[in-house]
Length: 182
Image (cartoon, rainbow, N blue to C red):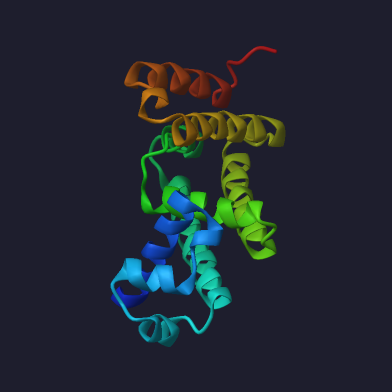
């Protein structure tokens, strides 16, 4: 799916920012329009309702996640090393969309929950294809989830350092290469 046109992207970015910084209740159409620097009518031209705005965010997340899985599958270092290395929260477009969808999911938004599950399944499938063992693939997912959670919600002080990341990637390489012991 191609990137949204500039005005739509600006509106989605404003929506993501408000969701991430203030929560779903603050993400009104008026607030999103104001943050994006457009009129409410301009917002309604692109997204006819708040539900349409949410649908736009979900589609954007799925697009970013699909691109990430494709990159992961083609990564020279392998899917597992790519996944763990990219699990440090870096405030990328994908990171921001994940946090925004998580905010919606916490409010019982079924579409956001399904998009997050689809994203996780894409990563799990790519890892399973590489390691050929679903349990090992899940363990790698959980390792990445831990890194992501720590960095996303603990602030910059808790982002894995280069040395910590090298140590973790060494462990991942041993696991993928069959050198792990139970």
